[in-house]
Length: 265
Image 1 (tube, rainbow, N blue to C red):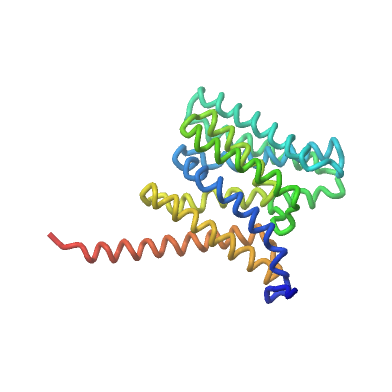
Image 2: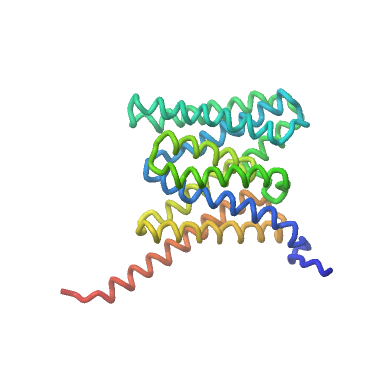
């Protein structure tokens, strides 16, 4: 059997798990990102992502490096759901306080991880994995749990659309799944960059364009990372940003052409 390789001598079959992980993240983060922008709670994903990472790291600290993957998933989901429900409860004290509260939650979770990692010989690697992710090295076991969780989130988004408690709960589950696949940086970029780039479009067009932008950013980032031997998560963040800029430029030129063709009254 002939094994296809990239110019960087990377077998193409090694990239399929990363591409599948990308599809799982994109499928939930595009609709969630559009809702996050509409609700004006831009930094909630960073806060929930850090809390999910804290939950998973707590399992490592308590149970050790050999802790099963599903234990880490349970720890991450449990802590993120508690945070999400807490944020729903705190919303009643005033919507204008929501973003500052989210910021405080984020910094508390981030510093808690730093405190737990102090003295851990593998702490630096754990922090790097949490922030940048290891999408090229996701395991079959991770993908199995992530696929099941993503299906639940997508079904919940379809059936429970518009309910605040459901949005926060599903958001927490989706972020927890994604952080362990792609890291905090890429979670934030996937939620915000496509939704922000396509925010001015009509509803149906916006969703389609955001999906296409995310797919282009992920595929180009994964292949460039394998080819150039660069960290995959940070590179995908940049390819998403470049795809967003090119989309914005293309849309701007299209609108200018349309404006020129309109008759002057």
